[in-house]
Image 1 (cartoon, rainbow, N blue to C red):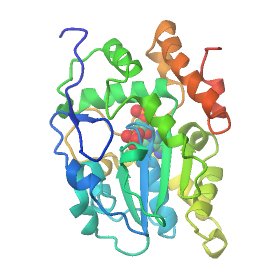
Image 2: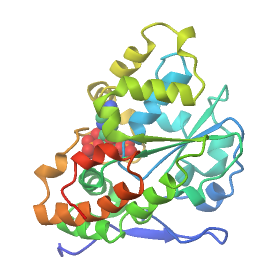
Image 3: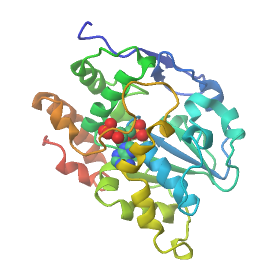
Length: 293
Ligand code: A3P
């Protein structure tokens, strides 16, 4: 296969939205209906660029909202994927009680808004996002890229030609809104380092009163959403057939096993700009990049 060939994408647009949104070519997307979905006061949008740990976050959030209990079935039956499933899936959701969790990869400006709805955005250090994305696009036939080359994906990612839109612009757009009280930002590396802290912060954001719950709820959620536990149920987390596992390594720094230092520096250069713009939110990333102004 030609080393420069990229995964196959389709760029979808909507007359009311700025720019385009890139999805796997064979995606059975429902963009018009997704964009036009009218958000409700009890909606909880869990938003991310792909491969930033959103499935892990869904599992945690679901349990926080359901007294520590896990999802009763396949994730897509209870947490619809707005971009693919469209508004009907949300309206018909099985879990009608309490907050409705909705998954999306939309940029901030595309996500349906409601003054009382809540929004969570999870970010991950981009070098590990690229590695995770590499295995994802290779394993999912919709991208038509099973023989694809890692180098080509790195180039495309740095130039903003992979899924959705430019990763750095998408993160910048979300973090710019980071002080809004209806938006909660999670950094994947902080969930890895101290999951219990992050679960407590999430509970506060979601108005889940932990003192009225079982004493061990936070440690139970941490254990029950560990990588090992989620691996045991790999098929619960995705719908479309794939040849690579969905829950893979779940570590910080896997890029060291895949990238040249030249590639890492090209990415770090763009990451540095993000850290400079949001030094408090992204403070952990200072230890993960190797580029000074
Ligand atoms: P890797 O491919 O680096 O292992 P998303 O759910 O947004 O698609 O993100 C997928 C990434 O999150 C994968 O990263 C996956 O292994 C990781 N992940 C999923 N569950 C996890 C968990 N419980 N702990 C840590 N990482 C997890």
